[in-house]
Length: 370
Image 1 (cartoon, rainbow, N blue to C red):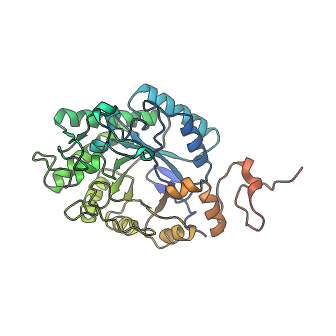
Image 2: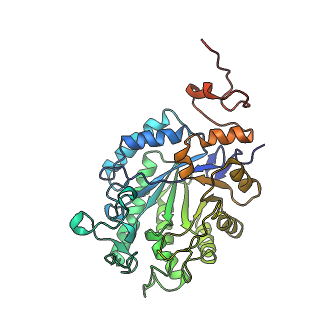
Image 3: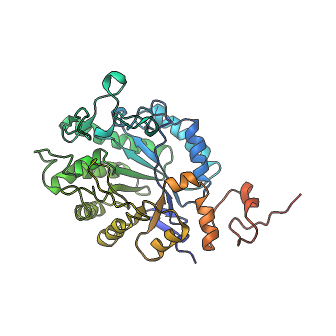
């Protein structure tokens, strides 16, 4: 039996298989509101047969958007728009849906990738950014404003409010975004956090605000809703955040009732030296899985069914997430099931698509011809 297609639980949430669709920003919202693009895009992915779909980084405040066209969940209009997309998805797919809640910090006010991804100046429609310290991401950029106590409290409450909105519209799990150089990661890394108060300096202090956000969100969610976190396990920069600190952070999260870790890397500094290659982040996930003991998602250049199967079968991670590979092939789980001799959920309208010579992938009904 394929281990990739075996069931697994992340806290209270049961998944039919170990394939996770990673969050992928679409830069296609209007004032934070989901649009028809999200219905089309997520509709493809919700029919893929994966075990879990995680929605893109969703800003908890307007200034926390990466770009002006980021998805948001900071007001009732955002909640209604995303709720309508989810309602329509639910009519045709029972796939569990999670959402990644985020604040971009000093990497906010940026153009979409296909527009260059650079910081948008105030005179061009950008906005002031916020961070632990007044240190820009790139040397030529305007420095962000260092957050004071009232700013920290406001952002923490914004995460709570967004989590409650996610619960109201029927989201199954929440992933807090502490990776890729965004605000919670900025607090963790000594490269971006050079505060001299209780939120900076020591590892304990640098973890304080991300853990406070986790605690506040956990406190308002019902026990049946899964809550996890995505982290960059290393900055890939000497003197930055690293896997040893990630283990300590993961252990603190586990003690607070965290249900899963989604292990990525990098994003905090242009000086990063990333050893790109197939499955290059899997060793990070493997170390955190064994030293922290939480259900762990591996991600990063996992593209082939046999590769994903080996990661799960060897115990290196509990689940495998795909992003770009899923954009390229939204039916990746179907093709993986065919390659590995497994079965996958698919809508009955598509059962006739099963190729000849492939053991039964879909359903229990043989489709005749008329």
